Length: 115
Image 1: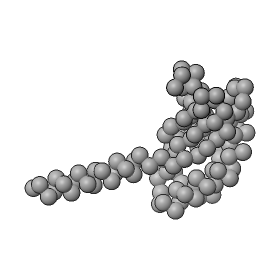
Image 2 (image 1 turned 60 degrees about the horizontal axis):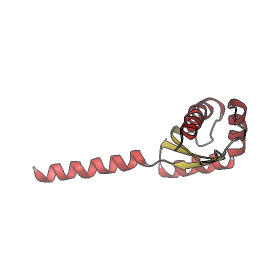
Image 3 (image 1 turned 90 degrees about the horizontal axis):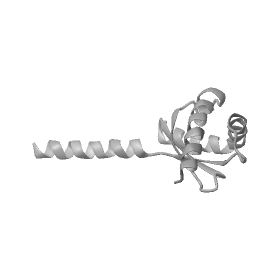
């Protein structure tokens, strides 16, 4: 990733966090965190990775709701950042924490079996 791409991703991550915390109220009422933003090289697409702390059904419902409301989110984002183009937003679920938790359970079982 180029320095410009990284800077834009960092800016969008900061603004998306504020938007999702203060500006957008989701019907699913979940706690979410923006974990990463991956920008396309031409800065026209932003993949927004979210960590959502709730059941799998609510996680999926929250992502679907954000996809339905991405025009509204994009409009708010466009008013907050100064870029030639406001990037198209693609929301993705970040399962990193779930994977870490699963691995920790496996390691714990291994330790218990060794004893």
